[in-house]
Length: 201
Image 1 (cartoon, rainbow, N blue to C red):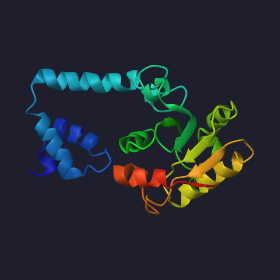
Image 2: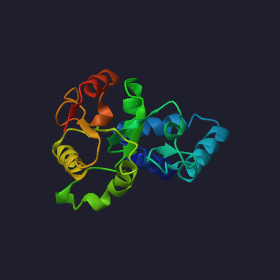
Image 3: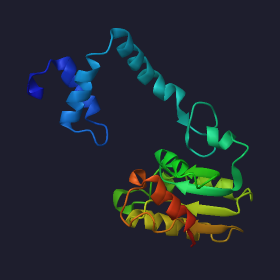
């Protein structure tokens, strides 16, 4: 059956699934039709969970990671290395680094990369918040873990120059992550190699 023949309510749900990254038309159809087999109670629970998602999950007040309270679980963990700060583009990349099992410090989410052609300058990122954390003097090393594409490299160099005068080491994850790759799609082993081979900027 062609997608255009589905009832409007089904097409509506398919259109939402189709907005998710990596979900094409056929996958959106399969997901929607699979949900039709769910009991009504389960559908209601799913809908309620979506409604509550944005209300319950907010950026961590310290690092910008996903959190249900004021601080995320990582910032609250007393076992983390408080002198090492890893800067990432998006909160979704933190779990990628955590899965590598090779990093035990803190994080800072920038909220993207510098992109002058798209009108995204330093003021559009969480650089002021980063500066405030670094100037407290508790950080001895800042690791820049930003995807190694053109915009990512430009952002890394900007951060290195911006904070060069602070008494800390500034490093960049090594080439275990291929140039031009998106950090979201790197596997745990690759991330582990990149972290262990990071270099000073």
